[in-house]
Length: 340
Image (cartoon, rainbow, N blue to C red; front, side, top):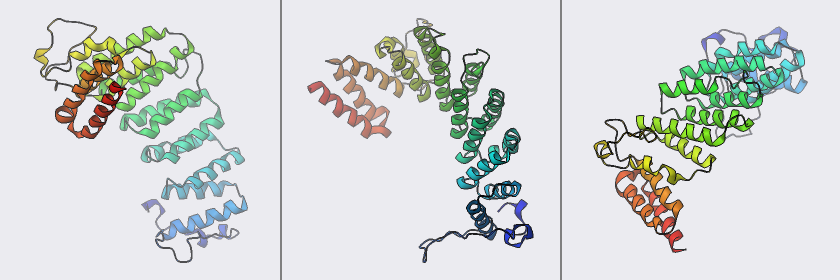
């Protein structure tokens, strides 16, 4: 229990709570593994069950739920009843958001914290409040750029408060996520977010040409691959762009072949801006490039499948032995497909 709750009277000892009948938690007659709650937590939750049964929604209920979630940030029922109490009282929901700011930062990996904010924003129905939340999540991600719950919440904000105004929530989002990738090109969360931003905003509305955007995004991914060839996030993004635009993988064969050589010195010396070569010192051959090329051969089918099988064998036995069983599965599947 945190220091802020030390020397605080139990609810059972407070005269102002004498009108509430506490309800102990039922744990069975002879529980095999009883939970050893602290006296403070058991007391608070006993009174919480009491007020839920009575249906009370009041300022003291807000104080009680605040006490409980400080002791257990994952107490979903306390969060949910707090939200219902806020609505019933006509409370200032934006003030509730600000109250929860530091709490969210401290407990950013607790799902219930972000769900509570989502409920508050849904009730507020305010694009201005949503914009403030974008700024807040940016500050949170500056401390932990890969926190799943924060990213999920930010994406919900963008989609839920989606509008066609160029100055809306989507404005600047692509530039912001690009800054994150400049800081850490291996931030898979940022790559995922970029895909959402690119394909869910202007392209979805029809403001941008899908093929042109596909070429731009492919070029962006290839530049990042050149910086860090063994970064799976950039390769996955590139695959996503090709699949989304229905572009055959084979169109990138010339690019991929630059990354399957054993040494960067073996790559062609001709400068091709459309196909940037790996940076000096890159670890080659690149596993992801080999996998990509094998997929090219598999997509082409026929006799080309045999080439894919040879690549999978090299991955299983030499370049990517950690996933040996997976590559053996691909070999079996490929051979069966070729025979069929």
